[in-house]
Length: 154
Image 1 (spheres, helix red, strand yellow):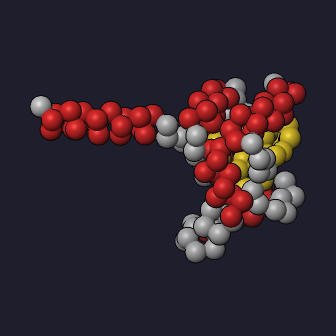
Image 2 (cartoon, rainbow, N blue to C red; image 1 turned 90 degrees about the horizontal axis):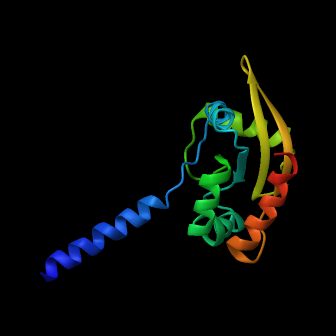
C-alpha cells in the first residue's frame, strides 16, 4: 500500500509539473500565425538565457510561477528570442533574433515586447503595444503591468 501511495504521489506531481509547462516559440513566423489564429498578442522575450542574471531572475520569479503560466496561456503567444553565449544556436535563429533586436532597438536584457503581428507574403509586420523588463514584486506586479500594456490596444 505504501508503494502505491508513493507511486501515486510521483505521478500526480509529474502531471502538475507538466500542466505548468508553457510553449515558448523560437520561430517568429510560426508564432505570428498562431497569434493571428488565436487573436492573442505576441510576447517577445529578448534574453541571454545562459549568462544574463536579470533574465534568469525574471524567469525564476515570474515566468516559472503558476500565476504567470495561467496568465500566459490565456493572454499571449510566447516567443523566446535568445542571445546565448555558450549554447549553440541555429544560424537562421541567430539571424532572426539579431534582426528583431535591431528592429525593436533592444539594448538591454531582459526586454519583453508585446506586439500584434500580421504577415503578408514573407514579411511580418509588427504593431508595437509596449515593452517591459524585470520588475520587482513577483508575478502579480509583473502581470499587472503586462495587462496595462496589452489592454491598451486589444
